[in-house]
Image 1 (spheres, rainbow, N blue to C red):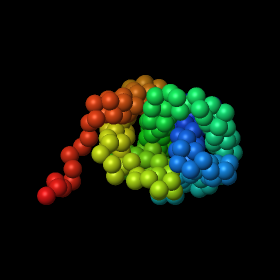
Image 2: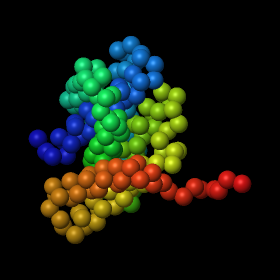
Image 3: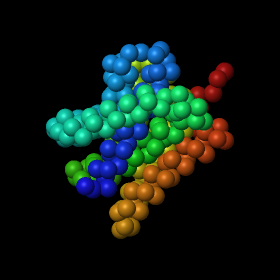
Length: 204
């Protein structure tokens, strides 16, 4: 079992937890509703990436372990829901771990299909953020990429660092863990210090 595969399963589970937490906080839906939101959050970004790259069948269609990871994540979020909500910024932590893992997984997967490094970085970002965008739309939230938070930018920075390390022949495990840690760290620092990118247009 490869490191990439393990991280992809973990990222899928983390996104399922974050999706289920958001769904429960919004409207306390039934199991099907929670499962649907967790599922979309988990597989949305990776599915869009694979469709754009022409990779078929999609990962979750080909391998049922991704479905099992989603089910486990949703079950854990139900069992430990009250405890998870008591933990400070629980959703933020799971979401940040998810985007960090999926960015690097998506970038690496794109490179394995002979995609240029620039496009691979974009595919990595898509893998990380599009599931969350779909989750926010379905739960009637403004998608986080439209807010002032440093989110997709952190993914792009992490993807570029991965490409740089890979270019210089750094050991593969370090190529994966360094940018994952960097993305996670950027998100924590940005939220803690309320950092944001400049507005596209200043208010009149």
